[in-house]
Image 1: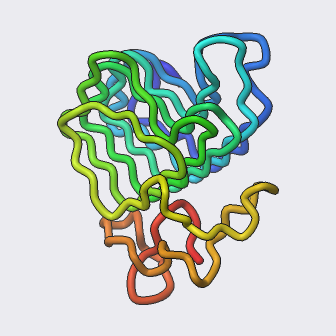
Image 2: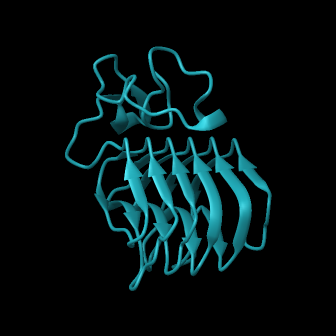
Length: 187
């Protein structure tokens, strides 16, 4: 989606990709001011690569001003990768279950103005400075998914994500319970 500005990448099922390349992502942009481009409600899995590492969603080399919400990414080296000056990106209510990292970045990252809220991170988070972080479930906390080994990341009723999110404008509308759930899927 490099070069897409003010667009939408919504509701896709992307899997078994990057079989013949070494650098990229299942959903990929490079050096673009997304001008609010929305990447949402996608399911991305089985991303394989022989090079820099397989990435589910990749905002490469100074990609800024993206809205990334309600994506479920699993069985890939890195669920989300944001390189260099990945500024002013909004990352809400995603379940990022990479094999190595939930968020990865390259050297000298700058995430100024970016916001990470209501996400589930199952693995290490490597991120740049300048971002704000709140209401996330971090690595080491069991989110209590139904059956992640089989790709079922629905929350169990006992999940610490249930009713623990914060409201974010229209992005968390339609929740059931006292508050939105954390992650891509409502219990």
